[in-house]
Image 1 (spheres, rainbow, N blue to C red):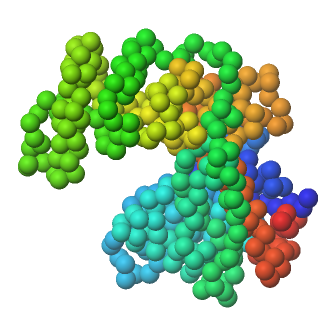
Image 2: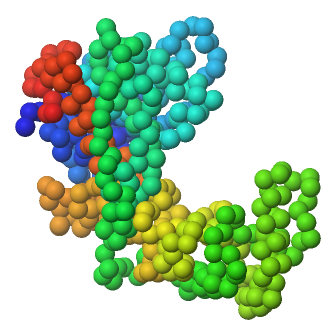
Length: 420
């Protein structure tokens, strides 16, 4: 397989690094400001990522490369100075750091990632600016931003992200790239149990007695009411109201009135239920709220995937996990009455053989952070390796429309051909 050089900006724990090296890439620079990520990056890849992209001189500090990767943070783009040119519209944002490198190095390909709402941020203005800047530098892009999720590749996680794919062709920037990414995997193949172990795990991952009591109460609630498809959040504090306060927003009035109706239709059972659990006074306020988002696919909380969220206890079908975020919202597997382990979180993000045991490290494994909170945060912030790998393969393949890459825009000492 041919080789290519890439740089890994906002590198985190190396989701892009994993994808690119699996395709034959060689990392010539990585940049990250999180010190915990930097320690892990060097342990796993033997490369220091401990440099702020803002401190990099594009002419002297950055090696020539064929692929620029970056999951850049989405900062607000300034509305000031819009008449002063595209560069001024992005100055001060971290996207500007990418743009200034691209203007100098002109790598053949760009692969960028961001949250889904990048497309709608500032009424679409942010995306328009990014698109205009990239085209101004000389990159052909897809006609619309690509929104993609791991579940489309059979990975049991719903995590929609914007992937920006571009090819340096300054003479053809108005001709959209035609990239085909195979997302045809049967979604019914998705199963959370494909990343889970059914063996005993560390005690710290199992839910507490209090959490089990809360979930058991809500399971009894669901079993006892006359409604199996609950299309609204359950807010127990409004059960006994007569009518929603008309000064509230209409959407909230609607939810409250549905809660009142639910109580009235199930009054005998709900009064018994509330009495049994001391009117939920022993539960924290957020645990007195409930969101059933599983339709009729399951019949019990213990069959689902559960999250303790600020908006309440949420239950979903066990086909896909919700997107990994902060530790406090780590999903609970109802069947096992425990949370997702760090290693399982790594598998959800398609990292190979995640482990926290350095003695088990091998060329084909990934060493996780020893601190659970850091590890969950790192995987939650990472790109999904399999998503990026599939997008990159499709991007490289589309280069065959004209020709395979033979050299980078500026000469390097390494081969500049990309594996396609």
